[in-house]
Image 1 (tube, each protein chain N blue to C red):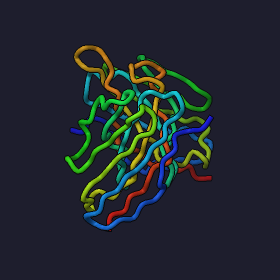
Image 2: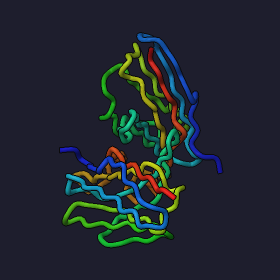
Image 3: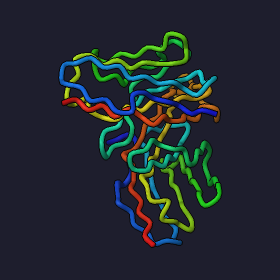
Image 4: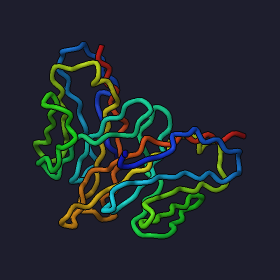
Amino acid sequence: QKEVEQNSGPLSVPEGAIASLNCTYSDRVSQSFFWYRQYSGKSPELIMSIYSNGDKEDGRFTAQLNKASQYVSLLIRDSQPSDSATYLCAVRLINAGGTSYGKLTFGQGTILTVHP
Amino acid sequence: GAGVSQTPSNKVTEKGKYVELRCDPISGHTALYWYRQSLGQGPEFLIYFQGTGAADDSGLPNDRFFAVRPEGSVSTLKIQRTERGDSAVYLCASSLTASGLATDTQYFGPGTRLTVL
């Protein structure tokens, strides 16, 4: 089982709809969770970070974290064609001593297409 | 301010050659990370530095890969005896710290696309 799993898609939604992107992770000592957006040929760009259970909203984006079920999701409201990109879920673990590993573990990414 | 920069943006080399990829992190960032991304995959961790020292090199695939950060700023990823399977985009990221706090947000550079013929 991969440490971080995402549905590779593509996920296609009409303009103005809500896009829902999901990510599951296998390691219960995961500490921090990130959503990056990556346009074709470009580097990942941070969209949201979330550290505690529940929802975190930032503009049209909402990240949801459920540590008991080991999933994190990203909702994009009022989707725009400019949101078309690959969305990468990333997880940072903590070690047995309670300190953070620096590295991020990424899922394979979900391709989102927003059509007019 | 300036973001993470990487040079070269593209590198084409022949199998068996040696290559160096350079990363210049955001000024003041103490942590620097190298990742490798193959087509259709998420970035895969290689190594990270806290200051001048490699804090975690568990992602380096074999001893052909080596990275340095001698003055705690610029880092160089070195690949010896390149193989076709090394072809990928090599991404560098930096963060203010690596302590597990909100200040650990990693900012990525534009990447170096390495092609081994």
